[in-house]
Image 1 (tube, one colour):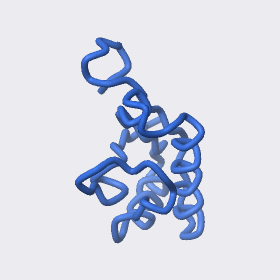
Image 2 (cartoon, one colour):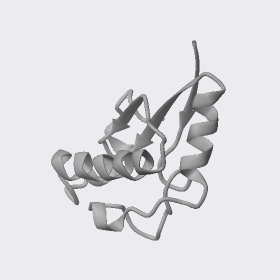
Image 3 (cartoon, helix red, strand yellow):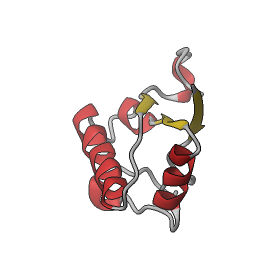
Image 4 (tube, helix red, strand yellow):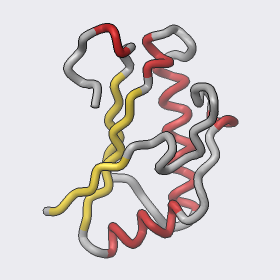
Length: 101
């Protein structure tokens, strides 16, 4: 099976000056759902990998992050696209974890 790994901020949604900490702040970029559908149609699993240090910084909770990802998936689904998985690192860059990309 083939897979494509996509970053979230700046690839699927607008990457503003701050962190996306609530569903209301998530804005998909134009053409994203169509691109994900095309990847799926070509036989790729679509997987999001994203650093979300706003969690580690205390700016949002894991529940807040889940709500943002729920909105991402529902916006894509509305246009006929789905994600196979979302993996995230909640740590800050200085924590020295092994899950940051």
